[in-house]
Length: 350
Ligand SMILES: [Mn+2]
Image (cartoon, rainbow, N blue to C red; front, side, top):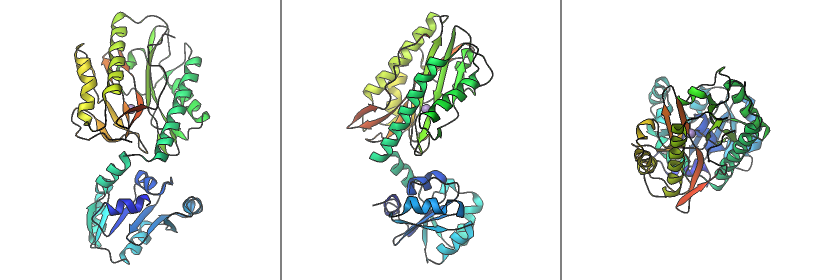
């Protein structure tokens, strides 16, 4: 059964209409900037514009999904109108007010497809896992090449561009989010935007980056020292974050909640009075989107299951001083964590 049929069957609706790029990609396996996927009990149609029609027809030939050309939303809605549908499933949180109003004015009873998408997309197929695994390998290889090339005087922005270049050179389609490169004190800002800060000896370096392969993301963070200069508080904090990351990797098992997963790392850091400096959640689901279900956070009631892929990324941040984060992309397999990433996590002094 293909994804459109599976999704529709899990919904109490006569038909399903999907526009958002990531959900459309999940349904069709085809990346595009415009399109609608319509599914009812008899058929699935991918409506796209003439720019994508040929590529879409090739990509979806032999699949359950037919391809039709539609230059605008109106022709898609006219088609659906002709189908005598009552209950139409749409991802409600992705609809603008005017879109929702328009559909209601057409007398459809709307129901929400988003929870079904969220649950289906969280558990990955073998194919999706192979793409995420490849995206992880490309990111790791780029990182290893990068640390061989890093030089005094290089700016954060230059470093970010170079790391992204190495990922593309290694086979990535794109970066999976805006690459974070932070030098020195900038490492204390968890999502620092790379600027013109130049690298000097003695600075800590934090790199948070990832790439996409066949539309699927990887996510990785490493913190290291560029030359000697860090004091004992840095080394102690690093050891604590590393142990928290390793402990979470060992102890997260299928069936626990995102909250309990988060508590493994947070509880460990608490022993060193470092939990108050761990200012974000332990991790997030990774797939077509860089941040998706499930969340590993103090409030998350998501239940972690086999074939879910997510990050494990504890970090501590000391304002005006330094920050440390260590992150791998992992999945649950046969009840335990399988780590996609093999790159050493021990503190490096380059
Ligand atoms: Mn992350």
